[in-house]
Length: 233
Length: 233
DNA sequence: TAGTGGTCTAGACCACCAA
DNA sequence: TGGTGGTCTAGACCACTAT
Image (cartoon, rainbow over all chains, first blue to last red):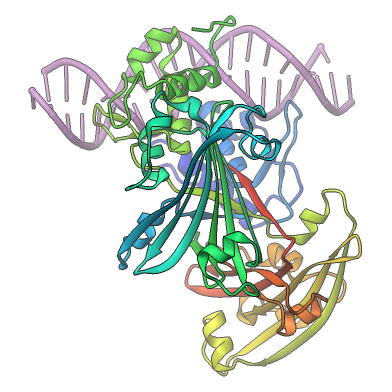
């Protein structure tokens, strides 16, 4: 039991993690109540609460609404991987970046668009397609739908010199995002635009973002199958 | 301004998000201090603090230690995606799970193994290959190297009834992990074992874990290309 | 009814940064 | 030196669950 002067919620966090790691508290079993732990550690309940909230977020414990239970997870939690959002950022790690606009269209949302972006069918949207090059090699094909309602000057943007990402980050913050990763054969139009052998696979990342309930943008990013997404943690 | 009776930190969170979205507070600019916001919203500072901590975690604002600054992010943050580790967990969401062991071998590490797992060539390792089924459909092919040094009874494990994951989570906590995601054509042995058309792509996840500096396990997970990896945040 | 986690409060101390 | 975010405290109310 440490007591450097007063225990911080981080210390408590570690202490609890230790107990779980040492199997002092069994996987799937209850752990003492916040009030009990507060007494044991000699801190206020709020401090224990915060430590446990973090542990819950990290996936080490499960907390049940108003039940006396707090359970330690038996199965392991997923770890996390960071997706670099801006192709420019990636290219910035050594290679020279180049950008080319392929398509820019305002149109009424088809049923498919509406589903993808999360707006009403028939509403106006902006469709942008562009290529990101790394040292003159095609690095990413970006196909993006933008909700014009996010800013008054959306429809004035040409995206000729700069990609939509650069504009969006300056104009449209988001509070929620959803990611999907997958792969498929390149034969359809995306692969062609990437100049990939149609029989080779492409690596696909999709991202949708919202500001509160309002959809901002939906983007599909195609990479050659040589693409690797790596992270530590 | 909402006041359902008393403002919760979630309401404040939304209120602030709204302000940022409406560009009432400019990207890159300061926002009022916690104390000021507390007065404005008519709540305790702790409540504002919690709301802002969450917004910072979400990447909407940047907080500088003891500087009067709280800045709205200009560049976009990298977002994170959670990888579900245990096939069992995924299958647990509706489908019935089945497991089949294909290979279990102790052997001296080849140069390739050593590189993959991070141990000395020639050291003993455990090689396990198995299949995870979801409702009798092949869901994942798992190919795993295990460092026997992590536990005294590693080489006693048969893995016949239960996958290595279940055993590992109970026995070998890790402090560091590295992930790689990619895809390729199925033609090589992995694809065959998944019973996939050799011309179809497979989705590949790789994970390596360490406890401090000691390698624990390296696993390669192959999925049919229909696999989707999704996350919110 | 007793106990729980979720949340808010009002107040406090700290270490630091800018002036 | 005054303002800031980071943190802790002691106490409180709520809605709920298990008994």
